[in-house]
Image 1 (cartoon, rainbow, N blue to C red):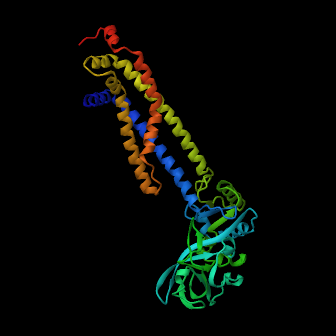
Image 2 (spheres, one colour; image 1 turned 90 degrees about the horizontal axis):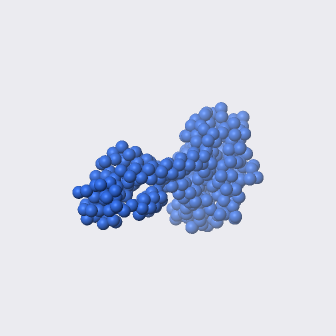
Image 3 (cartoon, helix red, strand yellow; image 1 turned 45 degrees about the vertical axis):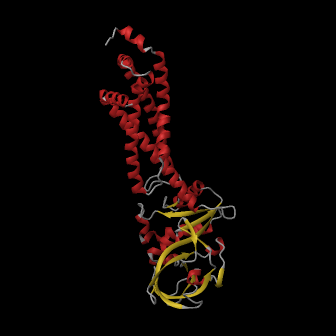
Length: 401
């Protein structure tokens, strides 16, 4: 085995230029394929973590791109468009829009921080929730009035700490105000927000404040504009169809692509018309073309090397190498090259995973990719090797030790 390995390394040194080209292209092929596969399963899992069949419909998380190149919509003169988008979503017959946004608040008397969920009027209708005691929010409690006590519904974990009807001062995302407890959620109930479904026991529900009248919309708090258009949609459509519907609505309001469905493959790149799906399809096509080119290059490399080195292989055979060992020397440098390319690709992939928090992919992917890439060149090598008689080759060329 050692003598075969030494001959493989020697063969690699003889073909410096071609080896470096193959190493680069193989690394690109393996690394790019693994990153693409990881991206695909990551997106799929993120959406599956949230998507849930609920009365034969799907529930999707809405992602706001305020911080992705849409700074124009943070300007007060554009608040009217955001309010209009909210109205269209609520009046839609195609999707059921539910306002949900997580914000922390501080209970000043105890100086403790809690996880608060600001929810729209229809939240408890869409997500049927049982109360252990108390009542749900009433219509008028979604309208802000200065000095009015803000009602909250608490999770079961707070039931021993607070009492129904208790009031306390709290510093909320909008202002410091008096808060009154109007209900407690039954233990074990599920809360749905921001792409996850978890137990509601530790949460505190707040009513999402209504928008002011359109004439006064520019006076609204910027956080309110963001929060009221965050949330989830319930629909019978797929993620892709729902995303297309979102684009139709936002384009008609001259605010293209500001809201996207988490996990939808047809999302546009911020500031561009092209979707992520089309970009990934293009990358996938390029990688397939690259793999085909790699197969052809490996065949060319092996063909050129065998034609050039038949005498050398014959001499190895006469020196005591078995036919299997001679074949290993002939194909072994290519295997070593693929191993080196996989190591480099794995390094690049791990760096990418660290910076993107994507899912890791096991070594099985590298092995499978290597087998697929080497399959045709391997068959070509076996066929060519079987056609040659190493003894006869020595005699034909007049080569002797």
